[in-house]
Length: 136
Image (cartoon, rainbow, N blue to C red; front, side, top):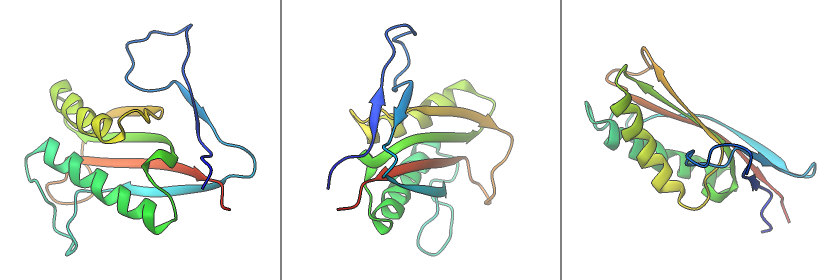
């Protein structure tokens, strides 16, 4: 399947960001809007209670499953938003490092946010994404 997502890096902006600054998809691409991926197991229980990294890893795992169910993969992601229920920058960075490492060289544009609370009991991390695919 041909790739629809083109990541755009800017020589005019700081190189410190660990992601592309923009991404595009052709008009013929099918966009996939994913619900926020939560750190839930198959029974709906929150995993990794108190552990930002473990929750971020489960969010990525669940995101990959949802992408697959939609006919896509992680390299089809055009942008992400990582939400962390914490006021500590170190928690945000910990979650981001897990997400960044999971995406590898496909460093899609992303936003990292600290929020006051998320929807499930003991939930610390949520991962939102949009993907684009060109169907054969």
